[in-house]
Image 1 (tube, each protein chain N blue to C red):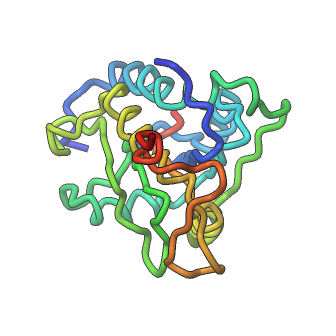
Image 2: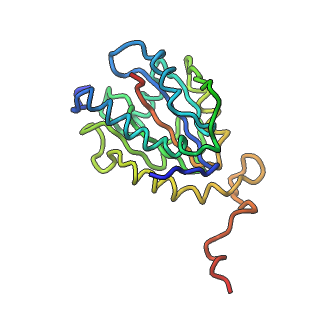
Length: 70
Length: 146
């Protein structure tokens, strides 16, 4: 990670803030709220579940965020 | 930033381990609760396969996985063999990524909004590449007719 110059705490907070901006488009819309359980699909050995979801949504604008959760 | 409530928008949040902090999966499960929208689907990529794949697609420095990246795909993009190149993308990789693509939430939102009208089109005949407008879609020029 030598190419990443920001300290981890700054990266984390900046990342959370900006990621929140991106996902606000979802979170702010009450018409799209989910229930309490939020599914997390594990990608085991391949990206097929992601690919399937991606292709099912052809015809829509799609955002893909690759993020470290820690 | 105002929310985009357009139903023609989808998001895939891919949590992947990059930082050497451990316990990534429990952390991912905690983070999923921050995004509650049925247009968003969340994944945990334990082997960071998506990060490795997009590292080369985005021409990142060798050995640096793609993470803290925000990829936008237009409605026509289909994932064939390998993951598709994004229509647009931004990052938080500091000097490791192109400076002109550093994350700017407002600019990213503008890009997404600019692509959304196209998403009102639907595919004609299964996998056909021919686009047809749905009933609710109108060409801008139609608004100018007398």
